Every structure is written in C-alpha cells, then in structure tokens.
Length: 219
Image (cartoon, rainbow, N blue to C red; front, side, top):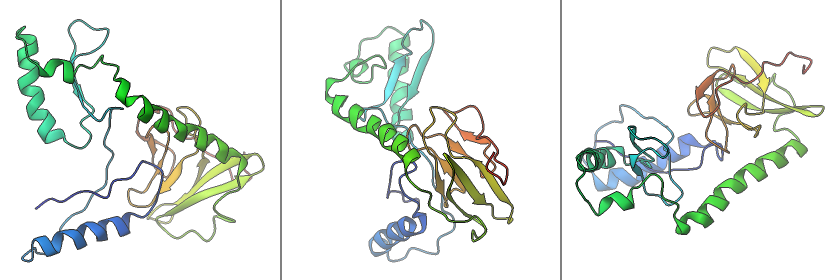
C-alpha cells in the first residue's frame, strides 16, 4: 500500500519525521492489518497557478506536445494525457482541450500567482536577517543551517558521512536564500524549487549552476 500527503511548499519547513508520523497515524486506523513500513520518500510536485495540468501543444511550437503540471496526480493525468493528446494529434474535437490548454491564462489563478511570487520578496528580506547558526562545529551528520559572515549568508551542512560543506546560501537561479532539507539531505530554494546537494551541486532545476563553495574565512 502506498500513502502520501502532508505537503508543504519547498524550503518552508524542515520537519519530515513529524509529517511521516502523521501519515502513518492517519493510515493505521483505516487499515488495522497494515504491516511494517518498508520505505518512505519525499519529493517535489509541480503545480500550475490554477491547479490544472498542461496537456497539449507547447506554446510557441508547432510540433511539440506536452503534459506537465501534474500536481502529484501523475498516474491520473498521464492516463488522461494519453487519451487527450491522441485526439488532438488526430484533429478530433474534445471539450477537454480548452481546460488543459498549455497557453491558457486563467484569471482565477491571478491571486495564486501573486501569492506564490510573494515568496521571492520574503526570501530577499532574509539577506537582512541574522543566521540560524552561531557556529558550524556543533552540526551533527545530516544537519545543516545558515551562517552569517559579514554581508554574506553561508549554507553549512555536515553530510551523513560527517564531511562539512560550506557554500553560498544564494540560489544560482535568482538569488533567493536556500534552506536545509534534512529529509532529502539537500538545500531547497523556496522561490522556484531548485535543490542542491550538501556540496552545492545541482540536484533539481530551474537552477543550472552549483552553489559557490565558500572557504573557512567566508570568501
């Protein structure tokens, strides 16, 4: 049996253990005969501003057809996309084409668009605040946090093997401050979802450049 939930926006919180516990506490009374947990995972899902996926011709292209923005419903939307894209490619009419049109500009999603982009404004104000840590020495394997060094913020993490990594806390996409994700052992950007390994290498876009390595003196 697979169970999911307890979603949160990337980079907002670092309480994975509590969220896994809540899922299990919700599931076991529903399925009393449930056996032992054998695996757990955490990952990101992409959502459109109106919570409805994009299925159809990629805007600006003539021969590229897409399905994306599943919002965690990939098995359902994948099946739907197989049906809808076939009809579109064959030139058949379907009332669902307009609903999932990738080029749509939904007025109803405007408020959500503004709300999501306020995250970037909030993140940039973090350049003016202090750090989360006084020193990197107290970090245990698997822990990370933000240090302030003069005008800079440094993302410091000790990987599970015990190696200490110091990198710039500024996401290489648009400069938002990254936050530590203890569950996935990576740095999350709360603005656009980029993820970086403890050593700063890119795990997930839109960022394409790694976080800059910082020496012990903050350079």
